[in-house]
Length: 538
Image 1: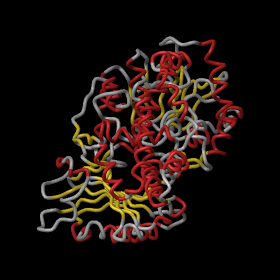
Image 2 (image 1 turned 180 degrees about the horizontal axis):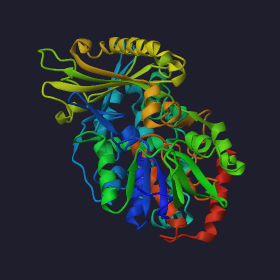
Image 3 (image 1 turned 90 degrees about the vertical axis):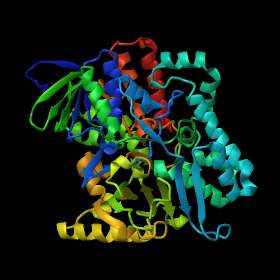
Image 4 (image 1 turned 45 degrees about the vertical axis):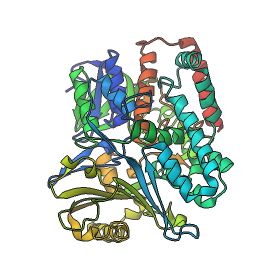
């Protein structure tokens, strides 16, 4: 164990072993840095982890994995694994999502749409539901491809490093200019420029909401382009053994290459001495020092808890005050992890898709528990459960306030009540589901707060007002010298592939600042001052 006594100073002390923190650590170690990752829990991965109950392996969060393709530059999970010498077997998913959407005059039995891995098949299916909007559908998703193809042609590193940006511009000027043209755009504005049908625009909303927890009008077009196209380009690929195999492989590879990961390491305070972050203090009193400190915690946990004892100018810098004015915490989730039997003559899930989204009423889509998400990853990987059974994960957004101030008895009673209501709603799509349950475990926002160590159980920031695309989203540096943030509180936001992107960017910026890779130090200060001014202005 690293401690104050051994006198070692690491190149980087990383708080948290979520995928953002692990990716940052991996890229730093790959470039010869000494790194220690401090994880409060007993396994790596955070919401990308997994757990086992009664022979069933459950993913903590989403089972829908982007970024595990074989080509291009946006297959970031594949590239992160490669950086520590690891590779995972995956199973391709023929559909990303099967949507079950509300009844309307145009769709009296409800709008059913499957997002096929094959792009043309998806466009044909969606256009068959809205034949009068085929041109608009093609143009909107066509713009998404412009974004994606541009991203997929450049090396993805730190957008805070002018030397890298200039190199990419020289190599791919059209791609860079294309991305710049969409930088301040939101998906909803682009969609409305091509599409008039309000029901179809609602479909674009749920396409965004299912991974960003906000509607299209507040979803940056850069993010939408990456998600809406990578599902067809690289596809959705499920790692054999469960999503938790990704962080476990990353952690193993990191340690094999000289990195250190310490579990049950509860960081209570970030140390700021002589005007720079230079280490952390753990709950057991030990201090671990580093040339840089990288927080994979949320910005709320980082600045309002771990920096609460820092000098005033560092505890809540201007940039963080500005961030809180523009962004708020996203909801957490109620999760129901179930093992179900499928040996009966009639099974609720065998003849179906892996991922489903259910919305019964468009006006309630954003309400707590208004949208139901379902993942059945054992349809892709039978090794997750005993023979004759399936893993079934149902989850829905909810706020921690709805679960606060309850006695232990009231809390357990409410968990049963809410889970029963969700299961009853699921019966419309999966008849016989309740009768097939062999095992059930219910989690709430309080569960996510406890085990993921995230304030209010949030899964990251969402805009509190309409953003100017990506312009207001913070990157990895902070106004505290030596302190960096990584993960969903930084560009490009929520999602496993997104936080891995954040890790690539963070590692590159840190390597520049440590002098491990070339940079334009003279231009850095002026460029990042300009970035900060733009972020604060929007």
